[in-house]
Image 1 (cartoon, rainbow, N blue to C red):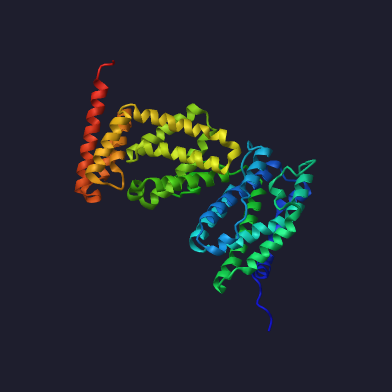
Image 2 (cartoon, one colour):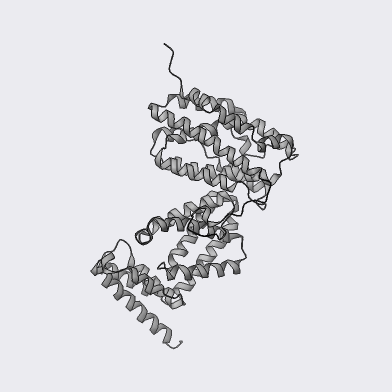
Length: 420
């Protein structure tokens, strides 16, 4: 009786066609022929960086023990180094395919986490082909020495030993037959995704001008950031912003999360605009959101979260993202001008004493008054229109309107008080 097939063998056999298809992709053949432009290769690095950022995050928080066992060091620092070293100023390619892959990673992590072991198999297996790819890149771009390309040196001289150890790890995993099938299916999907990225890199036209509807079909056609790693970090920031404010989840439900993600990608685009232009754009957005019941405090917080996620994902470009902190500080100056922090804090405290509210409506009600003082139309009315007795209860609705009235009265006295 023959021994059962090991997982590594099942993976090799189950992905042979997909692997061969990837190896014959025009992008990699073009690297060998010396016909690929450097900006296209940087596009490949950007796409891989976005995918590895998504994988790193899912590996760090997965509850699937078998998937967690396949975790290795992050490849993102090496990719960010190379992108920065080769210049980030050119156009970004392969964005749609990269976003399709990162979205698939998130969905698999939530629904079929064992399938991401197949993704790990594809990534670790690529280490064995990196010396050959490195030689192609060096010849294509006339690099005298390709060792400074950190990503293509992952594994280094110990690549064969590393790959053998990873195969042994795979073969030691205790998986049910259905889970093994998910792993193989995941590996095939990973090969197909990378093939799609390679196909995008050989697109003969201009790089894609990404629009918000690429992330949220209901968001319209306004432009967003075009770098897949920036977009992925922005989506992470959007999710963090969404989790920060239970009021948003209660009021705007799933549709609100989709808009938070697409807004994040738009906010990330601002880092490459002149500061005065970015300021005008943010003031417009703050007015729009305030009129829809979202005080500018939430946008200020969102800007900080986008900044932090971008620095986390792309440390070499931290200085580039400082504009977002400056913009958050400007929003803060605007919203706090009409109501001192000490008064706002006291009003918020009084509300919580009366209402014990997990949605923190008192704080947001005071912030809506601050926006109203700055001239953001319907900031208070839109907020209160939603916070009815039917939605938040009679006690909280009454306490909220009392606090808002007190905040308005204090702001009015401040506005008419003679200058000292």
